[in-house]
Length: 149
Length: 271
Image 1 (cartoon, chains in turn blue, red):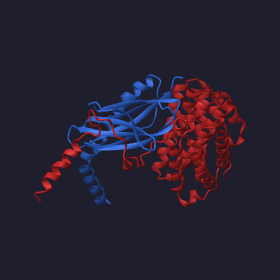
Image 2: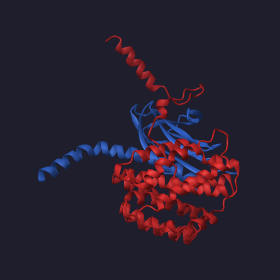
Image 3: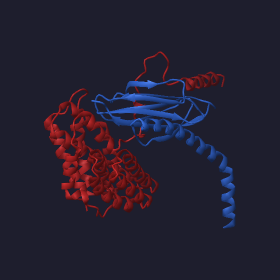
């Protein structure tokens, strides 16, 4: 039993550094997203649950989402402290046609979408550049509000 | 070996090229990019918010219709599948109560939510959150209440995921979506406005949810209400497959409302 505990402690100390970095990195992305979402919530937007993920430099990931006619959406991708440039592209329909993008050189990307009818949209998050050349975490999340009639 | 170096260099360059090249019209997604399971599913509240954007909806009337149906207060179910699907439906009802700003309607829904969520997740912090939600309703703090209610919904789903109860996650999600569709068709049938029916267009979401239902474990898949849902999903997909820019006919809206009525009755009357 003692040996097991000692082994676990040894393994724990070996893992501590990478795990701490992983958590810090995820936390960094969450903090950035939270700041944006708080500002949106303060202006009357309803915040939805997001997804946290990791990408290497130059990689991308696609998230399908149904956006309803009658609402306006702010779609946000927020990178961690290692993310230098995060971009978003929004596509729609069965052919995945391009709609809008935010590809400026910042680690945060925000686009606004007001659907003309309910449809399946695709949020493509691109980790265009990282500070280390390696991977970085990001949060992809959206906020919504009833569109003005 | 000599040929490997240029190939590696080319690969390195390709990796560094941003996906959105400057000054070029962005291309459509590739079929491979679209074939992904990272779906971000819309919570039931989204459809109620959207209803306000497309028509003038009397949410008080919808709350009254919900209150008249005794099955909406039912909290005794023998299977986890029935508990999860009904939990999803009652969460949707709670969001209707928020739209109507009706504290009594919220209390009715939250009483069932509390029982079912504790049976499914055993997370006692949910009890406190639900108590806070009811208090906020009594104090008419509707904006804060929406946040708490959404966090209850997400917490229950997270707890089910943590318990590796994938079937309950699917059924709670489908239950919430189905109730949202049912309320939306009920509301839009009151005064038929063709343009407002563009809100109901969602064949791809229906196809995705059908796939999730088909992926349930045998115990859940064999539940009569699940079989009924799977059997009707193609009909729902067809009715909601409104061509781009078109609207749903009054007849199809009526049919969609009928199908959703039958399905929610099957879920609510499950053993």
